[in-house]
Amino acid sequence: MFDHVQHRVVQAPTAGTSTPDLAVAVCNAGGLGFVALGALDATGAGKAIRAVRQGTDRAFGVNLFCHAPARRDPAQEAAWIDSLRPAFGRFGAVPPTTLTEIYPSFRGNDAMLQVLLAERPAIVGCHFGLPVPDQVAALKGAGCRLWATATSVAEGQAIVDAGFDAIVAQGWEAGGHRGIFDPDGPDPMTDHAALVRALLPLGLPVVAAGAIMDRTAARAAMGAGAVAVQCGTAFLRAPEAATSAPHRAALSGGQTVMTRAISGRPARCLCNDFTAIDGAGAADYPVAYDIGKALNAAALAQGHAGYGAFWAGTGAADSVARPAADTVLAISP
Ligand SMILES: Cc1cc2nc3c(=O)[nH]c(=O)nc-3n(C[C@H](O)[C@H](O)[C@H](O)COP(=O)(O)O)c2cc1C
Image 1 (cartoon, rainbow, N blue to C red):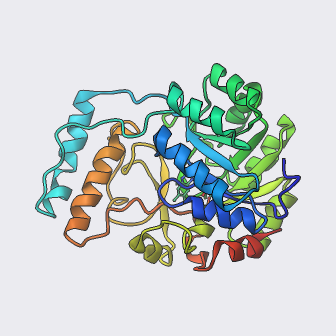
Image 2: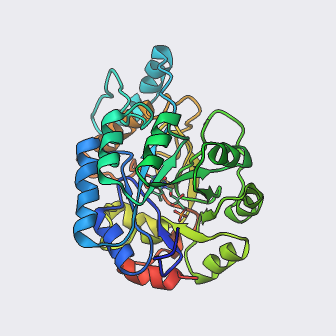
Image 3: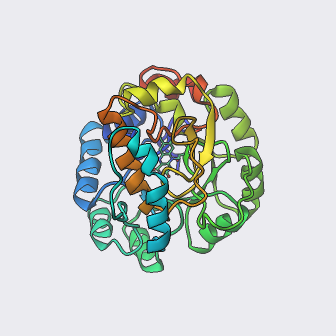
């Protein structure tokens, strides 16, 4: 799987901040680039994949969100909207009256499957769960290698049982959305090193993810048995990334917290006005994200950046502003 990859550094798919240019830069530097498709429709996904192909002839991966459909609860959604009314009021705005599922799951997204079958990316990675068996069979038939995120041994076992090729062991310290299949189920909150060790007996290659910011951390993860390291926050300040200016600026603060308030699923975010809100009553993912984005837009319109989804891992303060190729070389174990 890493035959043609010189450096065992995987650039994490980071929806909203990673770009085709970032994947190209990482691949051409000898790492493994990924394109995040979770927030794109089928047309956008096809364009993103073709944009990477124009910049590199090396293998790269794409990444999909495989969450269970949101449980719609009108009373809970109304209560969540109401609880955010004062925050909107700070900016002279009112919250939306209805919310939508802004990111459809790949499960059941046939248009997306058809794009993948036509484009045949080398690796298809999954977050928040697994595709349905027919999708798995179709992607394997097209020659794609399948990866999925696990936050526990039980999820790792489900990934093995589904016939996947590799497991991404996402530690509690990792930035962005936790890949946990059921956000309402028990969460072991395991760090990546312990999770890698716990997943190895399942027999698949394990990629370590979570606050891996330099070569020392990468070597430690490889020492725990990982076949490669997957880094998201380390690339957030790259010029090739689409990270917003306030998000880049906030990274140096470094303090992060796991919150459901922004999207309805647990995700590690730099502390800001949004993470100060208790997310216990949040609507289901991705319905809550709809109003989360609306609140951020209302705040930004008044010049306030404190409600952004500033996803980052616990190593945020160690992120460095430099070309992605330099980050690949700096982390390469
Ligand atoms: C801004 C951001 C967005 C992310 N988006 C995705 C995504 O779209 N798909 C995915 O599988 N993981 C996503 N992740 C999680 C990464 O795959 C990975 O687990 C994480 O970045 C590793 O921790 P680190 O950020 O400390 O390196 C995201 C992480 C960040 C920081």
